[in-house]
Image (cartoon, rainbow over all chains, first blue to last red; front, top):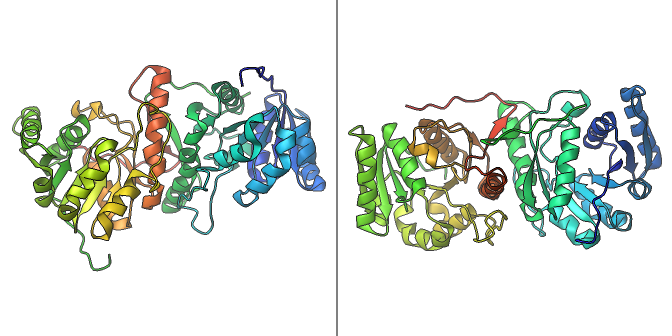
Length: 232
Length: 232
């Protein structure tokens, strides 16, 4: 790790980015001035999602669509937003393209139908599973698992904080900056072994949503000075 | 479970209650009108802690001190506030006294010196470890793991919410009521398998405290109607 240079992030790939999570994050980062590539296993789907975003962005930025491997290869940093059922296979297919880069894993290991029950995978968390697959060549972080993605595309204020875990502090600091650029308040939540707390919080928030008949439950950190979100 | 009656909680035992966590909770509940028994392995220590609390309560309530087994036997509901290193042994010693009661496990499975790293026990969480030891005769819940206990004894407002897990919904609802009576906002966080999220959040909050040089980091649930705390 000590020989790696601090990457300057200009281009971000969202692998498995055709769903609302990936599109929501891509929209925010494109607005903040990053170059965005939506990745999918299916080129046409990736290009359709990119076209949707370009309509929404109305000329403020240009998003492109590629198959996942190409998207990751052309980016400085990759984000993975796939259903948990596609987690292992996606990472195996992207391992080579991810080498030397930071990966932000957004995956929550939900096991339907009991999505309100925390059910960690054998690795301990989805993020630790990612580390097992991609190895030390990729700096794995995890973030954004608790965000209600509807709010991202609607330019609404995000009242849910982002907790960032990762294999090293420098990689986490880069993710903290990206979260702030997307208009969110983010906190360094420590080592990758802490990821199950944040992944599992999603199950608890789904349960609270069900109790109150809403889809907006989130969490905020209290008792410390609040960094401001840097939405652009 | 279906044959059990809803327990009316009047007397609460705090096993291992001579530390700041146990005394803080006891103080709040005594003020709210509950009868409190501080338990310890050492009778003199239990009585000394009770005497401290009685001074603080200035006649508003009377707290007594007993050895742990006696305290739990005489109570309607028991709370366990011991360091993780004493968790298994304490529960083994209290198994018989706990039968037929609700247990609120406050234990966080911290493994010094790496207390900012989530390190779940083989059972998955301290609370699930408690279930393994006490069995189905006791209704295990877990709560209050994220609270900064200094604030309890100082009559300060608690800006950290309480997330309550437990083996059944009715037991969790009783814990929700106790948290509100102690002046805290509490949420039903679901089944006991979700406990690692809340226990592990303590490690993340310790890490955030270290980053900011404070001891007050907590979390709040956002995006849903906030129940009011019922401090008395």
